Length: 471
Image (cartoon, rainbow, N blue to C red; front, side):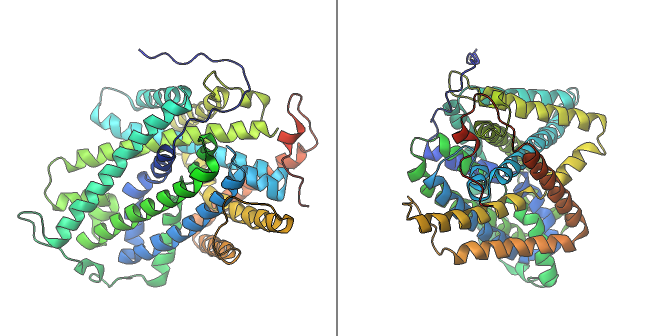
């Protein structure tokens, strides 16, 4: 039996141990989750085949945001990523608010993913309660994150690889169904793209409403910016990592959705309930329901594993900068911020416990509060890149990587984000979610400003304020 590495109370920092391939797979693992396998059905039911436009718009925003992140990571790799960049660009309060907002989002999502996976597996084992499965999943993935980043990278690589192989297999099967290459199954062609009300049965309104769902499905890709700091050559790796992740995610997302809306009528009840299972069921493949349930569980656990990693590194970075308790920067002999890992998972346990006690209220409220976090983080990233790039150009600073099309594409990204925020304010459910997230952000900003003058023994000033505030 493998032993958990001995824990020390050092603050020697993280140990580089992730390879470029592992970080690429982490990005895929973070983004390809239940949002694609399950949530895509809801988006299709709203926009019809025109949901492809929604995915294309959301994918464009993600490409721009990741390009901006890559430029900043190449210049200054940091486990705090967008939080560190917000601090350099807009000051301590902004960096603190963005970092803690991201951490809160992840620890709540960790609890939700553990609960969701446990609910599915419990159906296979009626004698084993769901809460026990939650305990198993959280304990197992906590151990994985404590074994050292090198072992974590290997584990997450194969975790994500299984999902990638499943999607590739789905794309191949879907193409065979479209072109009639499956024995005893007639070719379906692409007639469903324009049948049943046309390509956009609900017009621009449907595309916009689906966009609000789709944009959140791409959340998780930003973990590559955090993980790059633990690779052997962050500046050179980040460019290839971002390109690989973006191309693959767009192919997998767009390809999968195209197969679904081509093979099945968009308004079929089965599509909304489970689009991937619905496609496979039409091909009369045995064991489809069990197979898709297993893939969804795997998707949840893989994303949960990546979220534990991302949450721990973010709170570690906050500790480095004097924005979190000093204990957050304690590392094990293998360079694992074990206090940060345990703190992130502990919050997840608390949230799961509250969900068990008040299942109708607590977890749903927490998910509503953090549901729009990705919009705040992406907006902060875009603003930070514009400020830091202008500052670098003004000071003649050499940059390993420069985003193409600056500043036009950076401002275009901000405009697209503003449009999505405006659309969210029109939709009642999305408006509530967005306002709760904005309220939480305001509270975090207020707390950061109130604690601005406090000093913490043992933390160098260079870590507590990486760059003086711009205002």
